[in-house]
Amino acid sequence: MAIAMACGGEPGARLANRLGMASSGDRLLRILHRTTLEEHPVPRILGVDDFAFRRRHTFGTILCDLETRRPIDLLPDRSKESFRDWLSRHPGVEVISRDRGDSFTQGATEGAPQALQVADRWHLLANLRDAVTRWLARCSQQWKPIVCRKPATSDGDRQTSVRQPSLAEQLSGRRRERRIERYQKCRELHQQGLTNRQIGRALGLHEATVHKFIEAESFPERAVPVRSRLTDAYADYLKQRWHQGCHNARVLYEELCKRGFTGSYESVCRSVSKWRVAPRFRRAAIAAEHSTTTPRLTADQLAWLLVQAPKDRSAESEQLVLELSGLNTCWSNGIELARMFPDSMRNQSVTQFDTWIERALGDEVPGEIRRFARGLYCDLDAVRMAFNSPWSNGQTEWHVNRLKMIKRQMYGRAGFDLLRIRFLLPA
Image (tube, rainbow, N blue to C red):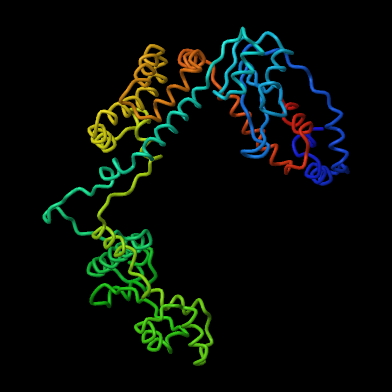
């Protein structure tokens, strides 16, 4: 039973066989279908959300008891009729936490008129950010010159781009410093009259290394090994063809093969790669020198800067927002409203929200924010409850993620009845 519930049919059968319990996938599924789900008591606080059987095409509904944090039922569609009928069969629901979809709004109103409806806070903030993103995308020609403007610098303020050593180079440099210290210590101990063996024991070096350090007039650098490659015999030809404009490694490889080259295509690629592009640090310096803009911001990224919490705002982003607010009255109102709505939700202030929606429905406000406010006004009671109610759809969203995992394990080949059993039985 547990194997069938956790793994399903064929995967469960493979696991059962490995555990010495011979079974088939059909038998495990029959066990699940014969299982009777216990009837849950009617929840006092109900959370409702949708999930996709097939993304953007077919949907179902998940119902959760927010007090016990347990799923209680699945519905095969997302219609107001199915939700209304379920509420009619289960009277006693006092609070319904939902998003602002019409099917859930109308179904809750008709099926449980006595229940308080609470709009989900996460969906409200996501809808606000979408509205701000649409506004910024429409007005991109106004804010992009400010965001992408490169600050003017004098010749004296310009700093030369300095290549930062890589991690491997840093480690190599540290090892060289340690060798130099041992070299100097060897010579100091030798001048004090110690033998090579005594110096080696004191410093943890081989006697031959100590002898090499003492005999050397200066610090002996490590020799870089020179490795011969099959392309070395054709280096002059490759360089000539490269200067003639042939930068295709495949063409160069085929030409070398005609001349008797027996190496690989990859070896030719490695030989010409040093000519293909400048070193990384030089490319970065050249790009910085010729760049006329700062790193670009998208409308979605700029929307995040407007709605993020005050503790996450940097001085640079505040300066940018201040410049955008100075464009005109519509921009200043839009930015202020975009920040006022999340602040009122963090403060759980219904009074602040009432002020926000009154201003958002007025003139000199971006059309996208005004349309968002009109949508909230049509569902005003549930939205106001979101600011002072402790209930939200967070637990429902968690169970939606678990449902998605089970649905994908079934590869879309199982029916709704089996999905419902595997989802509700552990709860």
